[in-house]
Image (cartoon, rainbow, N blue to C red):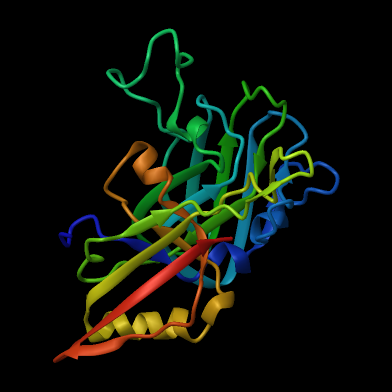
Length: 277
């Protein structure tokens, strides 16, 4: 693959270290649920009024990417991210759409709802935002979705951090799979039953065959030493759009410990497999 639009891995999620406050939270669904990986834990507002999530980072952090995961934001929803250093505004996204609208030519009249988005087609919806590398000690995320049919806004996970982007992109032969834990069994009456299914988790396997020393150092520092317990946000195709982008961007963990091979002078290669959390 080319070195443009290279894979992005957020190896250190600054949001997980932040002290959070939110405009509202329904009972049992606090905003700090967005720092946890349990699928049944979410932050949920009490209504569809504009919701503001403030995060304080006393030690500071660098960020160039935001991901809002497993949310119920509609195709008309918008978001705004502001990054601050002390009281000084460092970067402001302005109000941007939280959904990726299906464009004309792909949208199907009479089949797809008016204003349908690609997010509606992905079970665990994601909204992604990139920005210049910015240092921040706090941030403010504003979500607006007054027309949400659920009557509340809901978010499962938030990622804010600095992406690792290798000098050379992952090699061809990337495998993206949706493994399911289901198994088929016959009943006594010979009816085929399927058990333990219905919740496929994404898996991505790729190779970094041109891993230069600075890139390897980052992977060892942020990934190898944290091992299989570390949550990593992966974005395989940041230059793409639609289902290709959204189906290949998710929170994951290594399936085996990190390893690389010294294959050439000043070069390493490694194969990495991530499984969705």
